[in-house]
Image: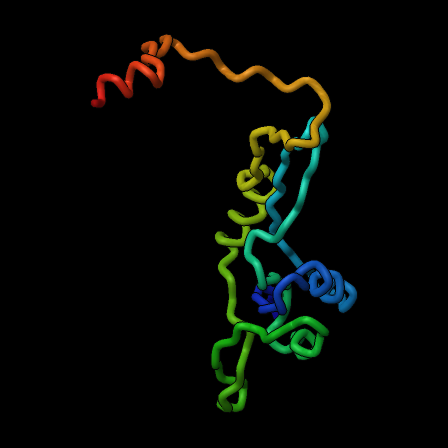
Length: 153
């Protein structure tokens, strides 16, 4: 029987753990992630988070997915109903199309969803800050408070 990709819903923030456990069961697993790069006070930081929070894709057969819902952190497996060889109704993991999986894998490998943030400086930064851009035109001078008060009366 041919293998195909299916989806498991996970408890929030447990996607990486579920992916590792699925791979231990000799199933292929895929968790697309987004990397966010930023610079704070002159130091580089990067953080990786799942692209689809709460979902892990896994490779399975129709009859070889029984252990997946029992993994700690798996909420459930997206299923659809089908018929077995005897005509009985059974639940099978919902199939993700090969074209969609190929698009996700290529997009993940190319880093299409990665983000680079603008540098930030906090009040505790002691180094040299970059100078803000200069205004193109100067402001019109404003009269002092005394003169404004005289004209207001």
